[in-house]
Amino acid sequence: MSIIGFPVKVIFDTSIYIPFINQGIAYPATELNIGKPVLYISAVVVEELYAGAFDNNSIMLLDKLYKTFDNLGRIIAPDASDWQKAGKVIAKLGQKYGFEDKFLSKITNDVLITLSARRIGAIVVTSNTVDFLRIKEFVDFKIYGA
Image (tube, rainbow, N blue to C red; front, side):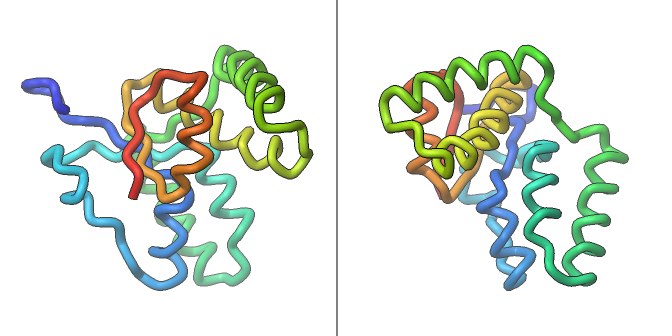
């Protein structure tokens, strides 16, 4: 799964960070069986984590997390092309699974995470495999379900 001489890039979905923030349960990168991955964070994941932070301790932890990834230059944000592709993928998902507002707004962020990860050749690690497998029907990307 790794390319000789090149570390594997990994983006954790929000569903991987939440147990760590709430309960201190960290996802062991060793489960990926890819050596020592290079971790990136999606700007979309950052937004989701801050949006769900309800206390100062969580916000301070997120500030440290953000600063660490920012200092390393490993924050990945959707670009204009990702937004365009996301609209097309979401339309296809809506046609196949229905156009409920809750579903489409929830899946939008996952599609943006997916497209950003694909653009840099990263694996998306998630415990939300149902939605990401739906996205995989329309987007070729690497996924690892926790």
